[in-house]
Image (cartoon, rainbow, N blue to C red):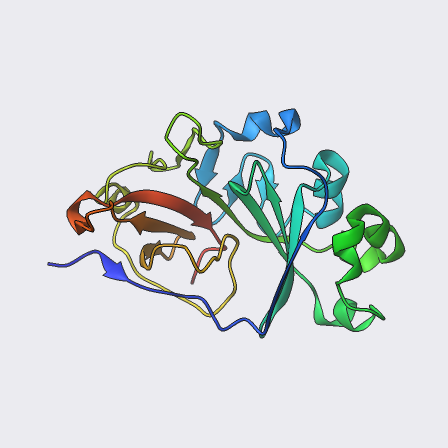
Length: 217
């Protein structure tokens, strides 16, 4: 019985704009999240899907880098810890239409942009993602999922979350052309990306990225 499968939920992106806002240094305010639990469909620590606002994150942690994503949906993705933590906030269409110059000014000065556009401050966290560093010890995220699955874990470990299944067309945090194509997704709201070793042996693939999203009905 084959439980592992290839699934690529990424819709085509009409735009991908990357801007840096601040230098990529360690943010001590994020240390509590390094060993927090990734709860499928819920969040990481007090980063709560559908609850945590863009304004509160920028106020507490500043901005390391920000990306604008656009397809059928439009979002702002904040990156921290050298890109190893990604937080995606989808923008309400009515709010988007109220912005005279779109989201481009957010790249230059996110805090000032949010001050000028209050509706953006209320954008809610839609998904979040953690990925590996250069090795297990240097990875920002040292915690595990609510089923005990960690970055750098083996290919069978995600099955601790049950039977894989589900999928969708929403953009997710951490989407990147360099992500491994092999993914294991669960309706509970978690997906694991499996990276093969240099020799390509799929049996030795490890977990490179873990992404949370709202649970699927």
